[in-house]
Structure formats: C-alpha cells, structure tokens
Length: 522
Image 1 (cartoon, rainbow, N blue to C red):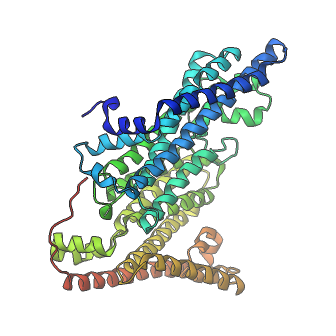
Image 2: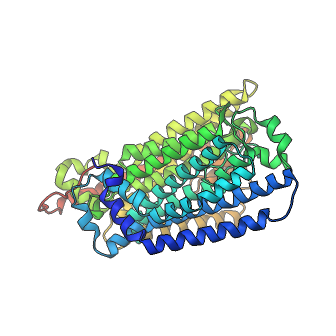
Image 3: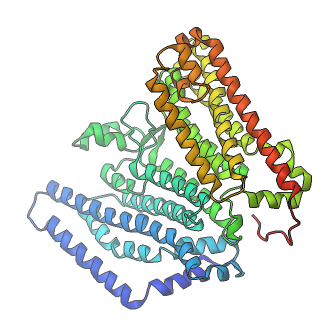
C-alpha cells in the first residue's frame, strides 16, 4: 500500500489546488485579516485581565474561522469531488487504476479539501499568538486543534459518501437526508442543560472553541467552571462532563470516540462502493446497515437522562427516534427490479421463495426488537421498583410489537411498489403513502375519533400514532380493540408479503439469462 503522502490522488489534487501564485495570495489574505482583527482586539491599553479576555476572544474568532473553512468548506469540496469526476468523464479511469479502494478513498478524503487545510495552516500563527496573549495552556490549545481536525475529517467523510451517490435517484436522496441529518445534529449540538435530552455535548468541530474557553479536563468541572463563567447556567452545561449510562465521562474523549466511529462508518460506505459500477452501489451490506442503526441507538440510550422521563413517556421519545432510524434502514435495503433480476440470475428459483418475499422485514424486526427491549430494560432500571411492571411493562411491550409490525407493513408496501413495472415507482409509492396518512389524519380528527378510548383504538388499525397515547386507562377500556389493531398490522404485512412473492414469481418466469454477472465486490 502506498504511503499517504505518495498517494497519487493526493498528489494530483495538491498540484491542481496548491499552485504557487494561489498559495501566496491565500497566505497574504490570511495574514492581513489576522493582523487587522488582532489590532482591533489588542490595540487599546487594557488591564491584564482585560488583555487576557481580548486575547481569548481573538483566539476564539481565529478558531472559528479555521473550523468554518476546514469543516464546512472541506465537506463541500468532498461532496463535489466524485460527482465532478463523473461529470468530467474521468471517474471510470480512476476506478480501473491499481489503487485499492481504501487508497483511493483516503486519497480523495485528504486530497479534495487540501486547499482548506492550507488555509487553516495559514491561520495557525494568529491562533498561537492569541493563545499566548490569553494564557491558554498548550495542552488545551492542542486539544482544540485535535477536536477541529477529527471533527472536520468526519464532515469530510460524510461529504465524500454523499458525493458517491447521485442525488437525482431515490437512493441518493435517501442518503442525502441521512447525511444532512447527521451533520445537522452535530452542528446544532446537544443541550446538556435540558432535562431528558442527550447529554453527549456538542459533537461538531466548533466544540474546539469551548475547549479553550473552559480549560477543564476532569469530570469534576463544576467548581472551576462556576468560578470563571459569567453565565454559569448556560456555559457550564457545555463543559467537559457527560453521563454515559449514568457514569461520568470526559466529553473530550466522547467527542474523539464518537467522531472517529462516525468517520469510520462513512469511509466504509465509500470504500466498498468506490470502484464498483454505480448501478450496483449499496451503502452498506444489510448486516452493516443494521450495525450502524444499532450504533446510533447505543448513543441514544447512553446519553439520555432516562430518570427525567416517566416509563411510557421515555419509551415514546425513544420510539420516535427508532422509527426514523429503522425506516431509513428499510429504505436503504429496498431492492429494485434490476437487483431482483441479478438475484434471479444468480440464485434461480431460490430468489422467488418466501424468504425473499419478506425482504427487508427481518432486519427491521431485529433492529426494532433489540433496541426496543433495550429501552424497556433501561427504563425499568432507571425508574426503580416503585413503578409496577404490570402497569406499564405490558403496555410497553404491546406498543413495541405494534410499532414494529406497523413499520414492517409500510416497508413491505414500499418494497412491493418498487417491483412494479414503470418509471419512478418508488417515488409514486412514497407519494401515495404520504397522501394516505395525511388524508386519514384530517378525516379522523374532523370526525373526533380520537375522543374515546375505543374509537381511538379503532383508528389505530389505519394509522399508528394513537398508540403513543395508549395508557392503562385506554388499555383497560378497549383491550380487544387494541389487540385487533395489532392483528390487522400483522395481516396487512402478510398480504404485502404474498403480493411481493407473486411479483417475484412473475419476474422469475419472464427472466432472461444475463450475459455476465456485474463486476465488483465488497
């Protein structure tokens, strides 16, 4: 394997972006801006304390510039890199080079945003000067730079994964939503001061500003933070202490571990597809997709203060996140007609069996069951023994079963629609799906069918959200109706399985032998 700095892709991007004239111009612009801002902050005669505050503000501004250019600008460069190669008809030449998928992936990860790395380096002297004036310890400054680099690499990897897929097709749009959602959560950050919300702290590279601002390492941060902070209720909540399954951990460690694992997942998706034909792109294998969804749920379970919730309220909050994650998982696992034809060519009659007809339900059921039981167990441990299991535990299990089969029902519907002949069948399926729920929501609300426990249970046959309001009173008043609603979810899911198998049999009967299997591999 070639060394990083001898990687041809990095060298190619460096030669294209780091021309001498451009480098001189960028260095001069950074120097002029740094001197102008530094003069504005430090020109007046100040006391020693005021000078330190001015130096810290200057350092925070420079770090903000570095993070903005490196993280956001670099992510944009990565998000355009592969699509630009495809538009210029040079991507196929890269696919047939002797570079391994991982070498080509690392080359694009470090090469596409090379100009942003150079800008960040040009701003480095100003950051060091601000740190000296503000008396920021070398370890804190080094930690801030490490946060900036690791966080930016995660954004770059997400941009590269986004660039791999064409946003004009359904799979690319799904990936876009997933990538933008992850990046948006990281940019927005977690509010550790609000009860019941994740206390993982901010996960974006802008956390580098908080590192130099608070200058605390250990998890017993309260005393130091409360002494130096002008707004302790807000600022101290974002210091270096997190709770992971109730145990205090250092947020600097949490930041590095979480971001590195995210970057590894994104790069895995790029490397396993980069040298394959675009028509057979698959972000992850089914097992890897399930593993990624479970990893996100571990973060959800670990960094949520479940003691702030009542049992069923906590399960409801977790279920909303789980439904979103596993709906995306199911969407990414959907097979189109071309994929079914390849499976028919490779597997023959086995590709039309009942096991194939329930795809991708097994992964959705496994993920919902694992995370659902974990949430219930976590809630049971967190709330203590004063809450009777017979009161809320059975309702929690029923709600989990109902939501699981409801989600499976809708995923199987989308899978069946995707196997129909025609153009944009999956897009039409999503339109029909949205119109169905929107229409019933208006109709049921107008008819006031949510007013009584029995009528609310009857609406659950058609729409899922009444189950979120299920409590002991509603269960006792309409137990049979709720069980009927669950049975209908199972029945409809089975109907879509039968319809999908019929479609598979039709495709198998009319399948023509393929000339050769599609090249590519994991």
